[in-house]
Image (cartoon, rainbow, N blue to C red; front, side):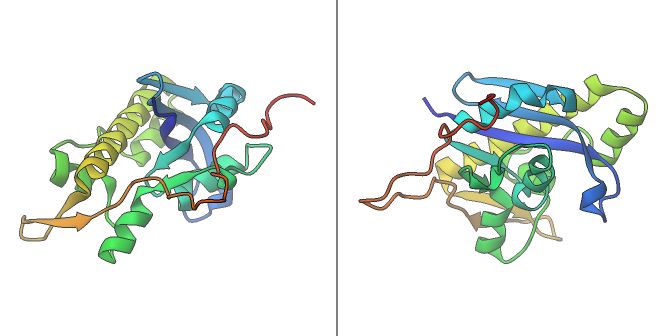
Length: 194
């Protein structure tokens, strides 16, 4: 059973200043348990051991956005955990950056349920449950696109004329060379007291 985790975060702050961004919700999908869960900032202590035990974290634009923001809350360094940023693979393959919603719509005919600006408004209104629902839906879209790409080694994007163009992708974990040890989560747990 896979111990991969698909994740996404929601934030509030000025997107032009990453240091001003504050986490409101993080949602995850655990393949091991076939379950979605969401955590608020005050619940991150419950999340860290889950991430530390994972085989790989999977996100979309996560190397540039999600991981750096999460790292400000974490005692260790999340960049040392095995990680797949699907957008990075898409950009390396196609030469372009695409929105998750556009790729999911073209590939799977599914869409995100809202956007980050709406989630910021919900936070200001105290509607945390709506943010969790939205974030979990984003994780579901990301997971389904990952599953499709991993199985078919292809996803699609829409052109301006409405045609679907393929993007070859390889979402498989990196192959460990003989004589080296794999980098897996589950090493030193940075969330337990010493």
